[in-house]
Image 1 (tube, helix red, strand yellow):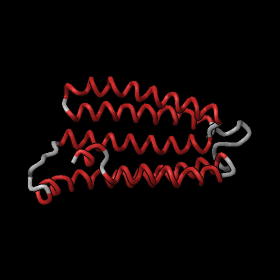
Image 2 (cartoon, one colour; image 1 turned 60 degrees about the horizontal axis):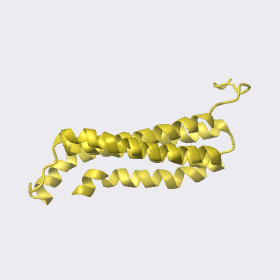
Image 3 (cartoon, one colour; image 1 turned 120 degrees about the vertical axis):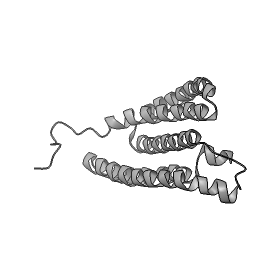
Image 4 (spheres, one colour; image 1 turned 180 degrees about the horizontal axis):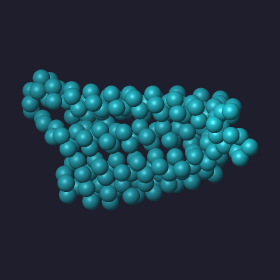
Length: 172
């Protein structure tokens, strides 16, 4: 039951899948517009799966509680929502980590790694602070750390997706 709360299986599969599929395709992309298209397409695809999966988890969980667990465990709405939001933050982290792994320099990767540890250092007090609202607050605190880690990798990735001044943003 704790695993279900920490990372519903759908989120874990998406987190791993994004990491394995995006990096080689991004490395093979020959141009910035090609990279942008690939990332945009992948973001739409993963986003659609996350939304559909989150709705599915929200709908199926009460059924699982009732029929498989015979109402021995109850996951309150706020707790389930916290798990879903934390799972989404993990997928965002995997997505941005994959893009930065494929595109960044060694120095940038080192910086993202250090900032990743800083996000862990911030997630701990955030989880402790959130504990006053119970397990959901702890999960939100940990999810905050995943979100920070994703944002740092996203920031570094943006540098590698900027078009040079000579290339128009829109097609003629």
